[in-house]
Amino acid sequence: MNTPVFSIILPFYKQGDHMDRVIEEYKADLRVLNDPFELIIVINGQVDASQDMTTEIVSQDPPITRIVLKKAGWGLAVRCGMNAARGEYVCYTNTARTFVEELIKILRYARVNDSAVVKGARLIRENTARKLISFIYNLENRILLHTPVLDVNATPKVIPKKLLDTMTFVTDDELFCAEVMYNCYEKFVPIIEVPIKWAQRKGGKSTTNIKTALRLSSKLPFLKYRICKHRKNTTSKGS
Image (cartoon, rainbow, N blue to C red; front, side, top):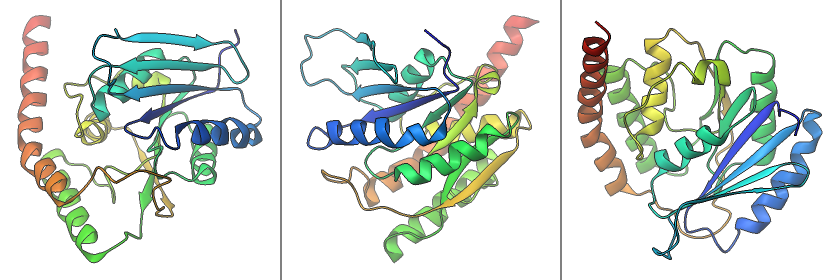
């Protein structure tokens, strides 16, 4: 099996009503890249608790890897996808909202620069409340984690595999994107933000609300503490 240029991680959480349609859309539309790619489908939270974590590689064009997780978690889903990725560029995105054309645009930006992380930035949000929440959360990230980006959580995000292999992570929850951005700051990795359109959900109900935003903001200081503790322990073991 040839090594793909792009590994595209597609986490799905409570999206059974439109998952197959989204996968077929990605399979068809991404062919315009003219570069080999693979899709890594991560079912984020398996209802049947008796089913073990499974990885199924489907032999087709493009190659598709299917991962089923019993435990739900945004960061967990993305990290499991990253572990399975074989491409030169590893991408993950929000399957409920991302326009394929926006993903293609960002993948093309990434293709010409293997020394930077390329990500989307939602310049227009759907309502005033979400704009305010986003501003506060991004400001908090800038103060605590030194991440000078417009939109920490925005996807798609594309990370060259050679850079990803130097990164370490301590979280597997909804703060994962914040930790990715902190890794970039810590390792002096340039971040290129590409403006993207905000999209209505393709189906299902949004899992993000004001309570989610408040929880993220309250947990961010603890993420900084965990990162510093991990770095300190790693340094102590290496000395």
